[in-house]
Image (cartoon, rainbow, N blue to C red):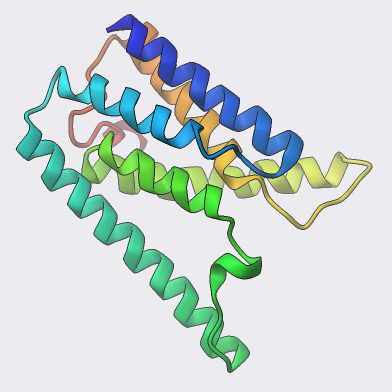
Length: 171
């Protein structure tokens, strides 16, 4: 158990550092991350429960990406591909990879809370940084937020991160 946790934390940290430094992430981190996340989740949940939550999470994510694409396309009066200039493939891959790990409610709450947190972190960082950038290292910042949440859950709370409504204390 602790080996999969360590691998997950190392890979999430590597994604963070690489995205912050290079604004890109090596592709091999994603298969390693999904394998370690699945190995950890399979310890607790049956495959059918994992498949149901993964499917729900993917549908939610694709609806979100489609609605953002649709909104920006209507706003600009031309069909846009959000992967051209707005969101990187590493960001999308990260969001797709973590769908296997978190139950639906947890995924939705993590998705929303992490986007808000990333925006706040980035705005604060840009207000104090000497060099300004219009590109947000989304996968990197979300990966470190997930690593902090998982570490806190595993070490301090010693609770199951796969339980639905894991974030109910925030509501």
